[in-house]
Image 1 (tube, helix red, strand yellow):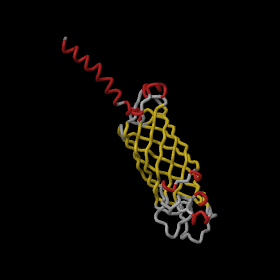
Image 2 (cartoon, rainbow, N blue to C red):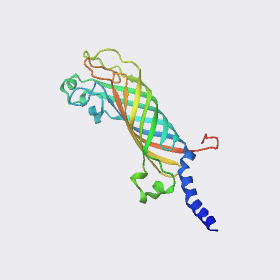
Image 3 (cartoon, one colour):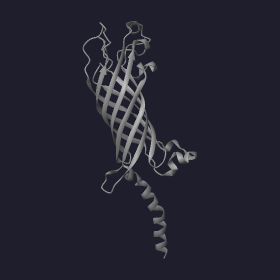
Image 4 (cartoon, rainbow, N blue to C red):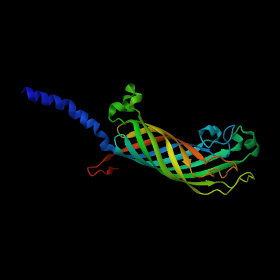
Length: 246
């Protein structure tokens, strides 16, 4: 009788823990949508110094809109893969820079961007499941319950700069395709058991210097661009065969 009581006691505490720990397997799939902003770091605009092709060349005046659709699959509790499609309308202009030479040049470019990409996500703080980790229980909100992840990936970039740029100091002709390498950080929190909201930000490094349709003769690197995305996701339950239930 004593042994039976011990077994019941163990099962009473262990079974709920195991069930909660495996809950992520029931929601391996997610449909994701997002809206946000894009900033290009190229040869037009930028900071007061030489063009750096990174976030040091950030011009808030050049911020433009972007949208995203994606699908996420959890391979492990802390490891996921996400397939993305981004559409953006980017802008870069010498009128934003404090560099006198570029400011006097006065060139402006608008570029339509299409980025299909895939990224690997590693959770620093794993995702929580259950009502107590949602906005319905916001009184007990804890930063340790916010799914925080780093991501890195690879993709392609189709870019179409306008034809208004005609600068004698520039060289070459713009292409229309480049490799893209996403890298950044994301945050996600549950609204309820099915829907989540999040924030994702990251830079895209590329193999082209012509996203803004121009390359300076003395350019020191390729162009890059930065996405800031507000995301909304729907969790999909997994069937017994491991497929998503829509």
